[in-house]
Image (tube, rainbow, N blue to C red):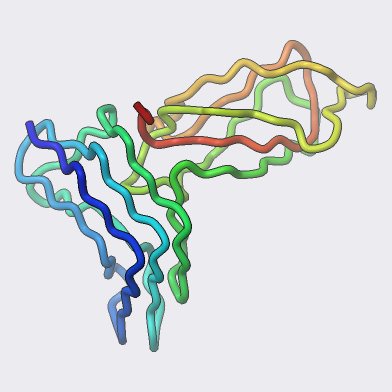
Length: 179
């Protein structure tokens, strides 16, 4: 077992010029089973690509082994700026999800925001934005039950209500355990 831990990357400007789409500035390449990330902070940096774009600032090179996502702990990836990078990375991430038709179960996909193909391991809050309404338009005053680690890649989550509702919620999700 090995954990990438105690690394702080802050206040840097990362520049790529004419890079391939798959290029990433921060790449983790495990060399054996059981490796995971614990105590990794990437904050207040600039990721900038000139004369092109790349997909993400970070990735896993799993050519030898993969990371154990079930053991990610204390990963902070916040306050960064992205220029010509297709997908920003944020952990914890707060996102808005809108359900336009009344459903009892909502399936949410925050996966693209989480670093290193993270799972939806922790949900710290679910808050309605405006009113949640049932199929008849009446306001619903309840908090949903949350199922984490949903989907084949464990990167989705489900909200369960006592009856079908529609509306918008803000959800804060982490790919790790914050303790």
